Length: 226
Image (cartoon, rainbow, N blue to C red; front, side, top):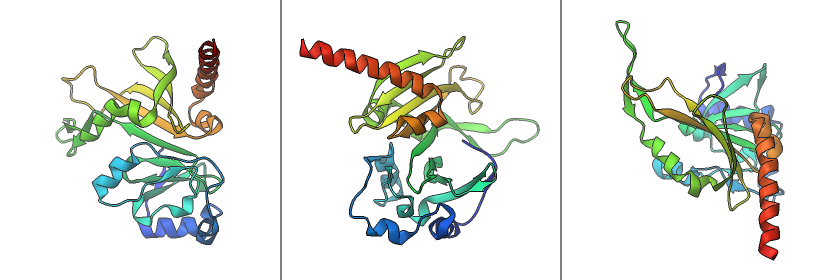
């Protein structure tokens, strides 16, 4: 996730966003009868809603003015600009440059630090229960349609396509958030979008994987016709 964030209250964040930081107004979204672009739930939104005890499920391509204020934790300042990104609960970062949620990024770590480092010792770690969502990538993100290894490492990137036409790039990566006893622990970064252009903006490898994915899909359709 990105650094250099400005921490504000949720109410101030939401009010600032609606008052023009993202160039949108609540009346615009409410006046629309339906989405002009294909939408799909941000992955694992249903699980987050159950944890919070509400029904505030956000969609990719949804008007950003519909984001409930209580879900906004931070409004990062990136390259001197404020209002194109927001950090939500569960550390989900969304990108909405045109008033629509174009990408959603989440990281999954096997452990979470507990307490601060003392006497030169590192923090203690406990298993993060949300890491179990990694086991449900097939259901939440769709099946893998293209993947590749990162040269010289045990890590890889994979492009997944959901039944709702959402696209997600999953990157496995090393993590410092682990006890010394677990040498094989890794983290995952997931970027989801409805449009390969914006997915590739966050993860340039997505464009190459998408081309391979489409070639495979074309080959499959031809064989089915035969």
